[in-house]
Image (cartoon, rainbow, N blue to C red; front, side):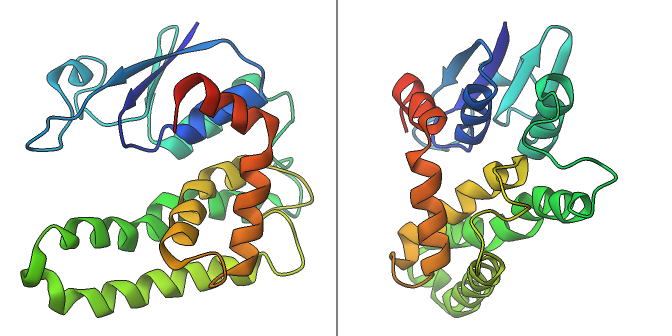
Length: 203
């Protein structure tokens, strides 16, 4: 059975949601953060030396990085679902968004989180960070103009990978700031597979 190693308050939802969409059996092994350092416990490093989450173990395969995990699950179990064909015109757009979510869009969101813990010392950085967040959310909002999904006409792994950024952005900026993203988030959270993942594993 596929194991999803989940560090609380991390971005494992995307993986459990995809597993539900694929109707695969899986188990979630959850780890608590250290209350002082907010870091992962040593037990998670036994699965992968970086001690990051999510980690997926499938037989002899142990994978980190959400994008790589999504790519592996779809190549292994997708049977052509949730990803465009490699020779299609949508494939490059799909790969772009699959990597963009963590490679670019998450950085200002993480900076906001970390800098907020500095109190007044971080105040000079807030305008630049907030500007970058607005830049990325605005880009994603425009990319959804006149369409429901980031790639093609149906859900793909790129949408699943971008869901965390969209959810964090909408919750931070409010539902009216980026209406296309708000619509996307509402659609994502209404999917039966998403709701099953939440019901099984919590938010």
